[in-house]
Image (cartoon, rainbow, N blue to C red; front, side, top):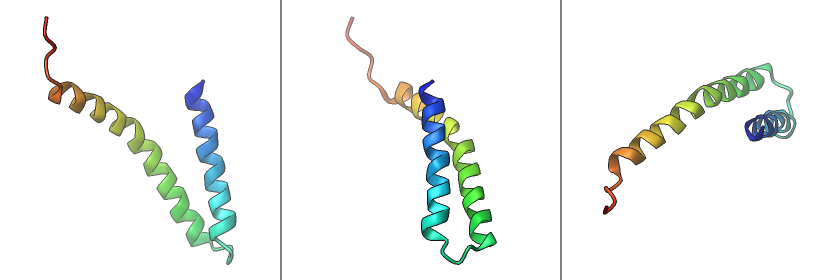
Amino acid sequence: MIMIFIANILYTLGWLADILFNPANSQRFRENLFRLGYWFSVALPILFILAIMISFTIRTPSNP
């Protein structure tokens, strides 16, 4: 449920970025914004998994 909330916030930020930073109403800006959002959404889960894997490899073993 939290991830759905975060996804909606990020979706809204894309809409706001289009309004605030695209005063010329450029189609090219919108396409670049879409690409950025798409690759961010693809990379985010991968980066999360990589962060977990790295944390497991560099952590020190605890004392028994």
